[in-house]
Length: 150
Image (tube, rainbow, N blue to C red; front, side):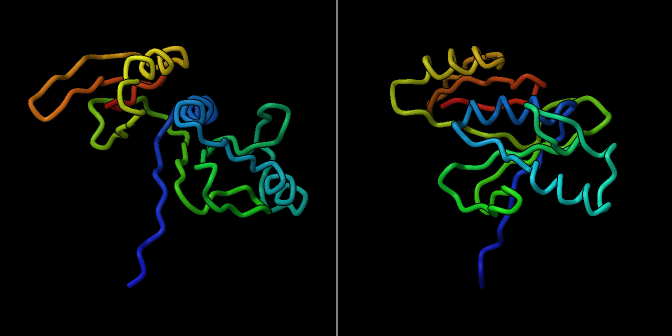
């Protein structure tokens, strides 16, 4: 059997702001779908109201993505073919605790510096956890999605 390809999809109020935060947080690349958007608009296959301008380029209004810089991607669409996070606009706000979250693992001895860097990007430290099995910092991204820094 062949392992399945997957991407993580995260609901967002502002997918482009979330993509910018997570690209910086993970040292990932923001995907640039402008060539694909332009082709589909020119062919009449996508309506203009499905797009907006981000950093001077056309982008999907309701979708933005980041990808690992060392993973393969489709050069025609800049869509990642490996480790990738897609942010999709949803109308409702986040409610309750995440059922799924990311654990970030910076180099040993650098957790405090990493937490400070992430706070500088707009994350918020929620609490410190110290258990017999380890310790970590629980944080929230700019839209309140929890993640941990070990």
